Image (cartoon, rainbow, N blue to C red; front, side, top):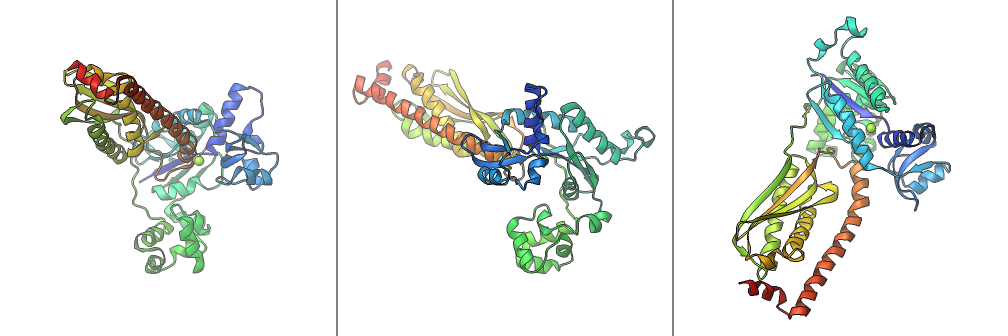
Length: 423
Ligand SMILES: [Mg+2]
């Protein structure tokens, strides 16, 4: 197997720098001054999600509080994140990768694996002046830089783990190899923390018994590592430290455009039994949709609901979420809100005898972000999730008020009466 790992250098910062240059031609390039992308710049809290190389020289670290970064580097220029723009940059980057291999696995907003096995025939050395696969890696890196204006690192090896380790060597704008025969020289001297997949807790434990480098872990008995870290972790660490990984490049399949589940109700849902029957049904459907999204590692931006009335008319409502999700709770929250709107605010249950079929769906799908929750999602969730929650609270309060108003106007059973009148 031949694998490339392509990784954008200081992605958020490069992308914000690029946008600034586009909007204000001739202004300073954020990449050339101490600068960082930080949570809430005005209030000066939140954390650093990316920093420029000059900022790194001051000791500014990704994930540290903005306040602490400013202490280290008082002149630090802070820029708020722009996730819409980042998504565009990410998309353009992945599109270029796809022209190099049909098998591209995006693992986070700014990195992806390419299976380059068997691609050598497209790169005759006499044409490229460099042997394959180096020539392909350089061409890829230079094409991204030329067409999109930001730099990437490309790591080359025979498996994903080693390719990933290689792309992490010297930055920016570099191509590195880490073939099995280079492990001893290039990987084993590195501190154990730098082994991909070795968490901080594991690293601390390893250090506690004197294992400080990847090479030292590789030379330790596997059973000892398993005693220390547990059977699964110990095995993983031993294999990784020796450069072994069986993980294949999993290209993202052509995704379904939407996911939905629907169900015929056991009895017609009317204004009378709505409160009893609708929420559990929506909860069940939301959980099913979330389960299918999760299975495909997909996240949806839009939630929709559908109903079929007892007179066989179909109605639907949809709404966007501030950030993509596959969380059953968030899907349900949106679904029930939409259903309330359709049933009461828009008055469907006052006009129709009842609902005989209910569906919940998710669309506006986003590719899987990462094996773990990356900073991008962390920051985005953090920012907009709470805002959205507040908004939804206000909306459901409004709905409640509306129901109350109807009841006060028409008496305590108003909602029911409205329905009975028609019958
Ligand atoms: Mg990166």
